[in-house]
Length: 246
Image (tube, rainbow, N blue to C red; front, side, top):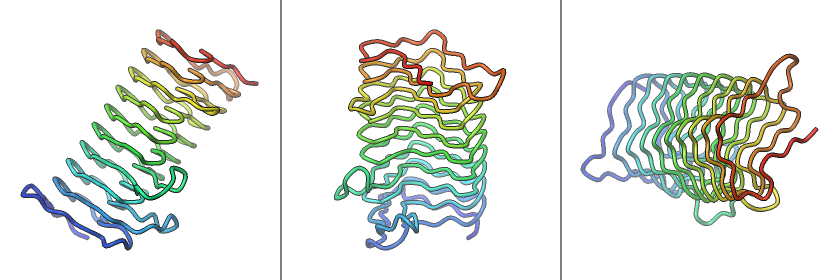
């Protein structure tokens, strides 16, 4: 509840013992780094996580978060830095019952960069704007990145492989999706990049490879007199390259 630095550089593990969240930040200006955070509880309602963040201008970097239902949860949190963390969810839960690797809810101006994510359910960005999501790697999940009612976000230089869906934009206008590699999104719902009722999107210079559907567009753009721009993408070896729906 106050701005301190917690640095586990000599090999510190914090174990929640299977109850609640491992660390709860309810302050501005906290730094949490070089820690191993393990063994959260199992409650989806309480968002049992490795780290819950309710403050601004915090730095969470170079941590390993394992056997935590959710990884890092930001709720009404602004201008935080989430960088170079290794995140995975509960190994004893099926994919749909795992938690999300990183979750943003009503959170603005955050930087989510250079994280390594595996075997978590989704990364979700809900009701959030002006965030940068860059150079992350994600595999073995459901939605590598899922936006809902979120505007003016930037998604750049991420590598998403072997997830059910790479990037999906629902009601999320003015997003820039640039220089990402998305591959092997397979199965009946597999797609590289999807849009539903989303306008003023730029999808530029991406590689979308070996997916069931490369780019999926459903009632997009949605707002009158708007445009979605798809330019200079490599869309190759997909079952369907681009699917325009309604």
